[in-house]
Length: 168
Image (cartoon, rainbow, N blue to C red):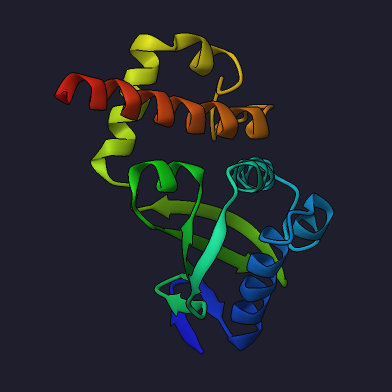
């Protein structure tokens, strides 16, 4: 057991986080909701789950969840439609806080390359209807994660085609 401040984590918390990851990649929202407190973090997790499913996430490496400071951290290396276009693998890191055998806070960090930020900037300039339409409030309460993931993947493809044409 690791104690930091007021929070204590045990192997039970790690198992809960592992089950959350299982549920996340099951692509079934009802499975995911079983492990989460009902709050804004649940909405975020459900949005990201929809995005990941529509973006054709494939797990490449699933590391065991571990306790770091006051969180349970799970790092998952994946590929997806945008990764395929850009030629990279991403590691999604879920950072969870657990209380009363329930995930009460869930944050996410990714290691996308600078090209992904360039794509988002390009979309803002060249395809603003994506960011004001299916990607409105992307990862901040948006309502259409699947449509957004598909639109961003298509935007990544378009971006690479335009970039490639400029180089030739």
